[in-house]
Length: 202
Image 1: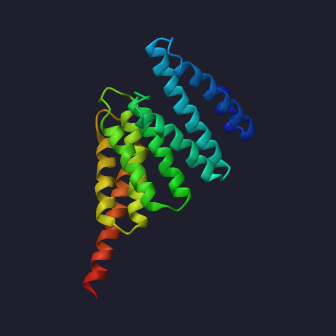
Image 2: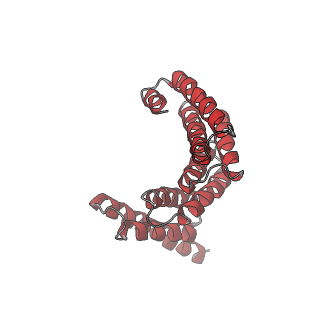
Image 3: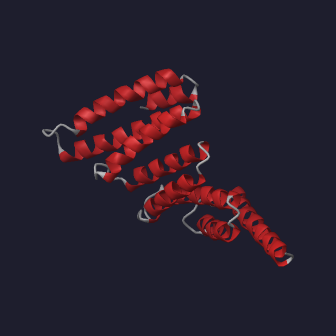
């Protein structure tokens, strides 16, 4: 799978999909082997989901959003069937689906998938190093979605949550993170004030 990701990054999309499809087959055999250890089967099932997610991301890069959606949905089927125990993987998959929905200009689908991803992130233990990164990525997307939907109060809510994560002791603080968080929040508040003035002037 690592080689396939390298191929994807270098633009060799067809070869990347070929390698990832082979990985799906290999890991599926292990996951469905009743004679294998439970931990090995669980781990293999997670790798199946991740490989399918990589295929979806690769198709997304080439503009084939229908195929991208097909593969991310296959991965999510494994999550819903209880075959993938890692909550981070579930969150990442919902986040990928949100991005595919965005490519297809499906804002409602984007928001729905983002909320699923956020719920997965919120449900992760605080000790998980991937928790805040996932939540921050999703919250920023939700801010963007609600800004485009002109639902500025909701955008502010998500911007404030993103700001709180950036300013929390658990987040690796950087000047850029702080500036981004305050910019997003100030930007949203400016839009709310502007829309309220417009409503009052009618």
